[in-house]
Image (cartoon, helix red, strand yellow):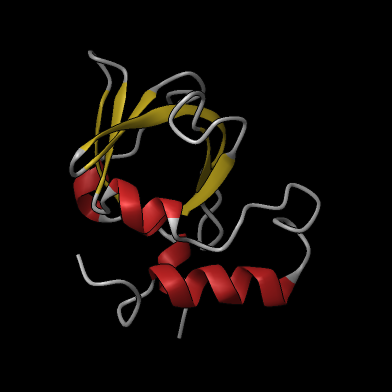
Length: 117
């Protein structure tokens, strides 16, 4: 079951803030900035521009990876390492909204039986 990966954890303390431009911190350091995000219940995610970390690459992080959001520092903290995010299925801007198989693959990767933290 992968639908829970598309919902924020209570610890994220999500507000109505626009997260675009917020820095994203993995458990072992920064990975980039939020390029796009969705707060839709049951279909929430972040698209992160990794900049120089993975040159020219964007990654899609399901909302369940978000542990907390620091509005003052404009940072989003996720519960995955840089390597786990780097090893995730490649982001496809054309598929992330409508391709259920792609979303299932990501949900499986980031779900409870996904990579070990």
